[in-house]
Image 1 (spheres, rainbow, N blue to C red):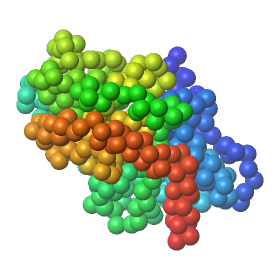
Image 2: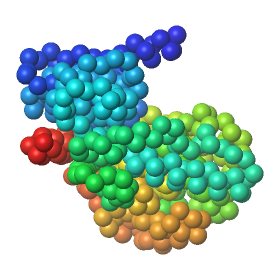
Image 3: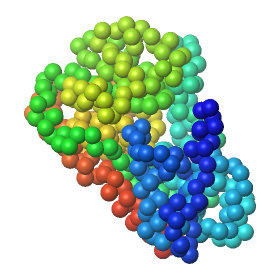
Length: 378
């Protein structure tokens, strides 16, 4: 039943806004945001809707197809193909005229990601003697056509994220910021009530699938040996049973490590985590600005991340210099050494920076600016 619901949910959408423009765009991305009510599972829901609205406002009839859709598409009707996946790639094989192609990168280049994630899996194997590839973020299809032949790219993230594409692509790359969900009307009220002296002993790891890819194994090794600090783990680990088995003691039988499972952003558990923790730590090996971390930054948590996260720490966060035990411990030690007054100031800066740079409005404006430049130069 779930399979048929999946097929129904992701079937192609023709002219979503029912407009009568002369130009057409095909968005090859995700389809479900256009068929069901908004949820808080991931910010790509509101971002996908925003992208479609931008194209409509630029004068395009908007068709939407899932990135895995491999059936016949009449490409000659389109002026632009935006997104990634099979429809974008197949357009290079089956088109009969020039079409403007724009790749949409939601993470680092897949070649970087696959190498980095498998390297991390190998590190765990060397320590534990078990291959846990299920806890990587391996992309089986590299889809090299789309990251080499498109006319332009728009990618989520800056710095290392953009650089990961430059190694394989010579065209123009335009960055956009990831968005966040506004959970609290005034997160500054939380900062006023927070006990930073006690809170700086509490760190949260907040992620989706790919526990090894996102560095959870490294944190378990560190925090299981330091009971003066606390680690709160939020993520769907029930979907990674081999990881759970290998790290069962650290996850469930260590007094200073708390494992919650998946945490809904609107839940009381999430609100408690925001109140009690000062830091969100996320030593991931490849991201395009993880929205889970941005959501916590919007509520005052101070990020401890590597540059591979694509997040600008801007003087309020803490940078992990390398994805090693020693470098992560150094970042943690530095964070804990900060006084309550400075931590409060950094928390406020984290909120303000996120609100100014990661709002849906900011994403939409930046997306429109980038698309206007690309279209004008085509």
